[in-house]
Length: 79
Image: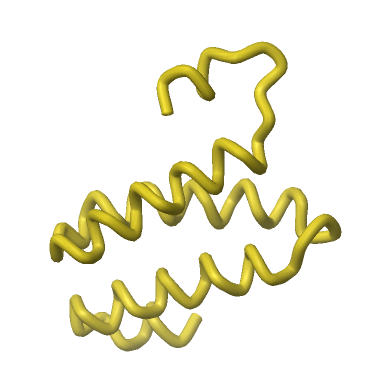
């Protein structure tokens, strides 16, 4: 992850995929705060590249919804 962040030029989609995996690991560990941090950043990157792959954005939004559901923040889960 650190290597990807410091690479020139940064490949944002590859970086987002790695961050997504880290976020999913935190989600499995029920560390929802850290998972939310990573997956929110992932969503922002995928929104910039939505034309490249809409599936990636949909997957990130789904993961965020799952986190909000686990945190019982249902209003956020529906957004």
